[in-house]
Image (cartoon, rainbow, N blue to C red; front, top):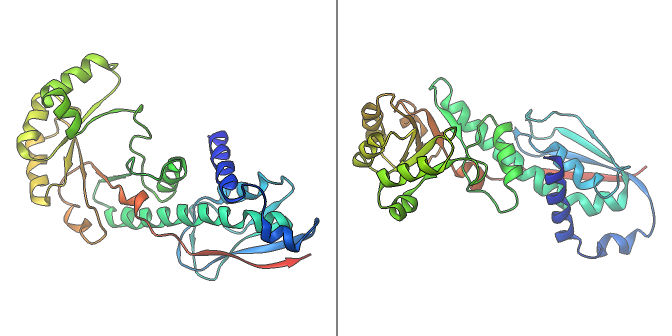
Length: 278
């Protein structure tokens, strides 16, 4: 995992520094040791501390990052989170990439924790989706876990989920499930996405392992859970917000998946400030 993360962080640095940092090189021509402070400007959950550090140490392994918090901590506005010590040129050059990762990942963790807290006591497990930023999935899904959520499929290779277009391509739910069982190993569960109660019954007749209720109303979800009656695990998905989650708590579903955790979380406001020579 670390090798994959390093590869992506290096690509992000290359994107920001294709040849050189003109601003920094124009004012500092040689090594000068310095220190900068990572400050929190908004309450939230911190996630991505190791990624933040790697944006500096991959450029210069003598850079020291001293953290005053731990991964997953609830942090508060005004809190000193870390100090970055070493070559000022590296601190200036890596600042934006390091903050981009940390702010984005912390925003996801903060949003996730809020939803997890709202679901507490309901018995529902919160899941993410594959609605992630290209080439940032490893960071975004990690942030969901830091926030207390769980990961759904990491990639298309991880499990069988037969959605509307798969069902249409196969000619129906029965045909799609039968083909999946014929193709895949017995160790793989089969999940089918359904949009109405008629499709729920079709999925049950096909002996689907997991039934996803897509964009159903809470009343429809309750009826679907009654029909399923423990014969399959039940996931619901579609337009989850903090405002409508109360209506989903007592539907009886096992899992709730939300693409918004990764594609719509606002960043957590953080800043690298007070740079000084030492």
